[in-house]
Image 1 (cartoon, helix red, strand yellow):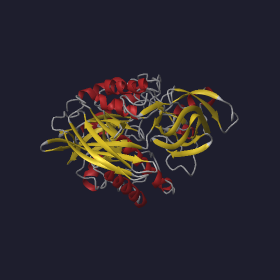
Image 2 (spheres, rainbow, N blue to C red; image 1 turned 90 degrees about the vertical axis):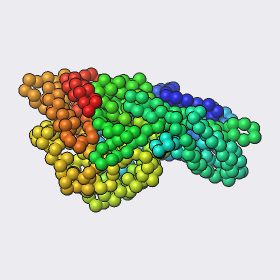
Image 3 (cartoon, rainbow, N blue to C red; image 1 turned 180 degrees about the vertical axis):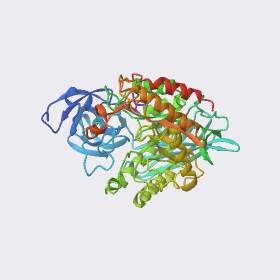
Image 4 (cartoon, rainbow, N blue to C red; image 1 turned 120 degrees about the vertical axis):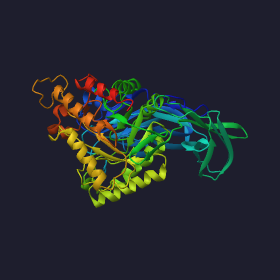
Length: 557
């Protein structure tokens, strides 16, 4: 399952995932051996490859002809795509989609091969040994789209609230990859509320982005308790009739900041959230639909209204489910804990900015996404880092003016980048990495932001806070790593944050325990990040009931 709704009614689309592919490792003592495995999936879920780091090739035959496009929602963490032994495309980054277009293919059966590589190295500035696992494989869905010479690449729909009601600013990108010009008609429909049409003429090999402004005064607002969604459909036709279409969804909601507040449709938000990794002991980062929904049901049972996608763009299935259930999302580009040296990697700026471009291009229509984040705990206390942060913030603003921006900082009273985004965010771990009482520590850092930083007067979020516990380890001594200590620390921490005047909310680190890179074993028992409210198998720790009680107590505040 790739999306929760139909995205095409005219364009012929086949899912190539949801089936068995042939897998063969390219390195190691099992190189060349052939296996059958599910796609999407991670090779770490296979018995012989639980810790495999290297290159592997996934292959299958496809029957097709003419012009088509292969759409990959995620390959970890680099991909090289070949058709009949010829390379036709490549991509870097596990967490953003990419497409490979092919023309003039002879009718018949063809061999499709995808070489995935999850190794670390200088060529990779974002995928480094880290406090989460970089899995290998085709971890998200794969589509084959049969295309005519002219097709719709995307629809972007941004809601705007004006005095006379809602409007939708819609951009439709159309491409013509034939050797001849093309005249056609573009028709746009917004759920029967509004529609427009335009005659287009595209040059050979050309493309156009067409902008519409549609009035939607009668549209209902997308709210947490009433997440109303509307279908946007673009159709291309010529003298022979309709030949291509694209369907997406949008929600009419306004997210903005005003002083120290974050406002959803003009109403002040208090965020009660969790950070969540795409990670599961049975599936790696390739969580199926039911497992994603189970995580969201757990978060909602705990009283959460928001999820932070730590530390990369998430599967679009996750965002579809958040759209449908009124769950707010902080989504961020892929970067966690990068030092100044890491950020000076010559590939860093290009790879980080490409991640932003691909993230926003793919996910701009999701009303659940209310904040774009960048560069978690990176070198925001350096002049070089400042320039990198500024470029990435500027890129986001250029691509999407409708959402506030932020980044989660761990620089204690030394961050110099708070003047750049709309929201100031901090990762704090009192009563875990140090013994300062949570109530003192949260107030201290908040007061510093307001009095001495360029973040003064802006909304303030605590984007990580928490404590670790090994599931089943119980101790009356309240020692660290016990479930008792985690429950006590979280009660102190959450209460301190939600009682801090001027604080807009909290994202607890984290919803579930997750696997980390083997290089982190010395600081992470079980080679896991154990700060989940539930363990990796989603078994509840003692902290579950504590968090649930506190979060529900603040629902209406």
